[in-house]
Image (tube, rainbow, N blue to C red; front, side, top):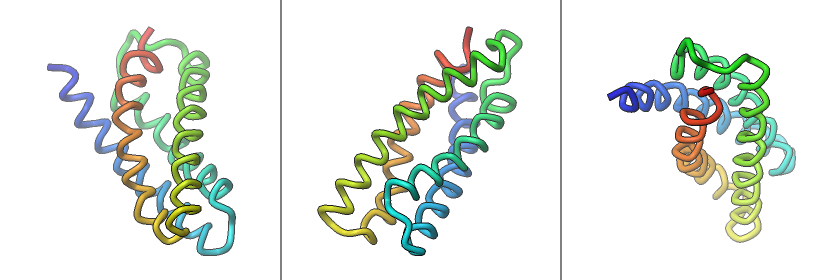
Length: 127
């Protein structure tokens, strides 16, 4: 089944993204940057990496939409998931403290990754 291969590649790329994203978030918040800004910086770094790798490795097909359309769809998806991620981290920081967000950040991103996989496979990288 094609979805299993796509899923395995997405998990590989996503794992790299989560590590980069979470590491940047943790370092920036330790340096005093606010949760909102640090999360956006981390997710931007992960997104830049993920857009290229998912387009060329995970969902590489001849029937992909043009780069511009893929990018617009990716940005819409990224903004939506970033809003959810940031809201969750702000809530956790307010309720349990900043250090708790460091543990929750990778878990949040992995959960959002499942949504991202489905929307990427069937909308972002598909005509």
